[in-house]
Image 1 (cartoon, rainbow, N blue to C red):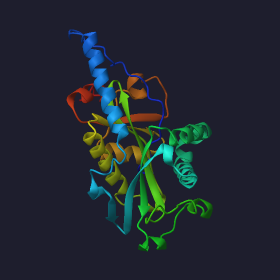
Image 2 (cartoon, rainbow, N blue to C red; image 1 turned 180 degrees about the vertical axis):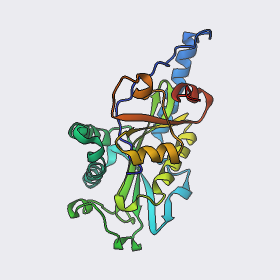
Image 3 (tube, helix red, strand yellow; image 1 turned 135 degrees about the vertical axis):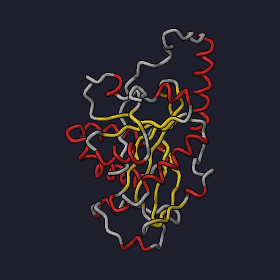
Image 4 (cartoon, rainbow, N blue to C red; image 1 turned 90 degrees about the horizontal axis):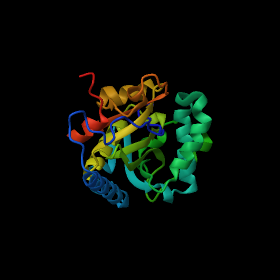
Length: 268
């Protein structure tokens, strides 16, 4: 899966508010003021009803035989049909990479799916397009959950993301980017990640972050080699190399402060 981003509880890094040796420690009032500013940015971003609205060019995707439309959604407003679709697609793509961890992770993902701060971009086939001729690896039962919303065709994938604070840096965190196998490898994953980066910057977030299973080598290559994400300083392998975890935390920072805290530069 080229665009899988399973969500795990992030590791805390050693950065936090600790100032480097020799550098003046910020005053408590400055720390609190900064924290308040970050909280306000996140609250404002979460309150937006349609994060796609500022980007009309991203409402549609036409490439390599695909004719798709994008729509915004929210975790608290998912229909039972869409919930079933999400569960089935995540299982199809992620049961393999998670291996023995999957049963427990499936429960976690079902809870995350409907969280009050979970935002979505849903990807639909355009109604009456030639996409009906395509086949899918989903079973007939799963395919039946690909409902039509308004005038759009069936779902073929989705993104779940949230606005959160990581090491007191406001970030857009990608919880899931799941596409049906038949629409992978056609530029859609890159298109969606570009959209998320634009959304992050539009909402004054300082970085985009995500979690990826090490076993999903195609996803790791997609993010690091093609999109130039790097392993974050908050990832377990950077915090403590002896910590044997099955995932890495990746990031792309947009300003110097975020780069200094979230990115790992020791190899440069």
